[in-house]
Image 1 (cartoon, helix red, strand yellow):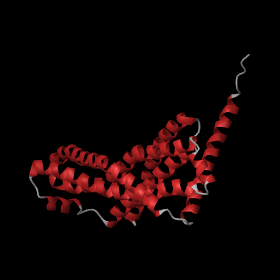
Image 2 (cartoon, rainbow, N blue to C red):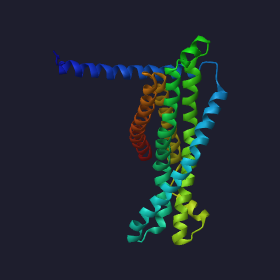
Image 3 (cartoon, rainbow, N blue to C red):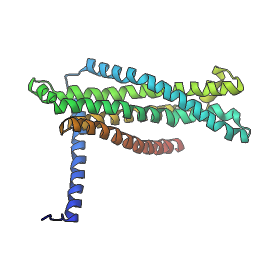
Image 4 (cartoon, rainbow, N blue to C red):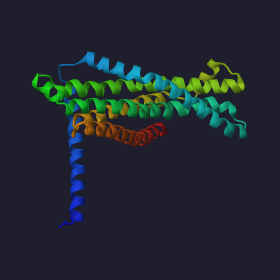
Length: 264
């Protein structure tokens, strides 16, 4: 006979499992900060991972940033034309791209590309017991695999976000040039006329948090992958979904904080 499970028991078990996962994730992050300041420092591996993340994402960031700038300008122009305010277009585009779109678009692209790659790579190493073999050979796998990748994403994604800002404004300029034939110098001057140091600083800080989140989530999901090859795919998928969710949460928090600082 089949015995029905008690629903309160199942719910309590899920709640316990959720908080247990949060606790292990907190310990994982705490372990990272403890290991990052201790020797040995694998600078070559950090540079190698930064190169892999930056170069392999550059073409996608270029294409996406260019399209975002061009499409956003094309969609915004009719609304400004109704009020005879097309001269404000470069300033509006500059504020939108530098303050929000460049960092967010870069983070979401890297969450899908880099986060899944890290989760799958570490997951495959976990299920094939390569991580256990590193521990036996007196190599700290957490230091070599996790710390280097998180540092690489935290350093590389802000650079990609700044590059995405430039490319997005370039795409916007080409759309403006097709309608008004304005100069590139004047466009960039107007685009940055209302952008302050706080806007650029907040964008860089956001990008650092995004990069840290992508690297940390991807490493966490891959480092504790189970169930063989099926677990590798699950780790990569969960790394992407959770990274994107946390990025949007961080976006809301950082925007609120930067607005409070701007007011005071």
